Image (cartoon, rainbow, N blue to C red):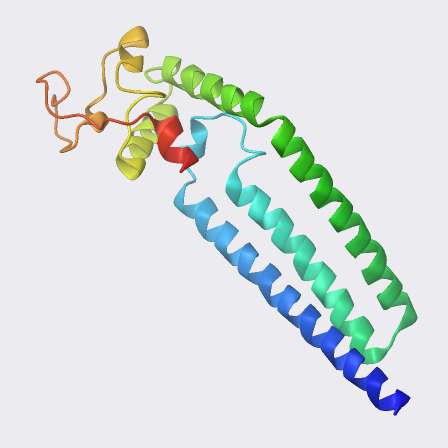
Length: 189
């Protein structure tokens, strides 16, 4: 009876870790796709370390490693792999709890930092072709204009044509309809 219970636990642990491993691979795939799709958009911020695709890739890699160790340790009943799995799982749970606490505590300052980075990107709009392209893609992709609204552009330069609902040459100077929300609001959603 006891031996049958151990076998059931062994296969349930294997199955749970297999799901974790597949989930980790899925996060890596989604992070890679987002990184490729939004590659130029990240030029606005200047600091790509906290970008969502990078975070997904890191978390996906950790989950994949953790799932692999758990699967191998469970199915082979290997003590070293099982202990490695347990230690990594404890570290991961501790880091997740710390990240949630830090994220909650620093939410407002993080939002302010992103807003400042976006405004810095607005200053560099005409200085760098990459930043200009990134802003234009961001406006069209998220259907937004400026940081909080289109009037933000008037502080630094003229409103770019990419803010127009129907983008065409010179549309912003001709008082064409502009995207209403600021990009900080669109990105937060």
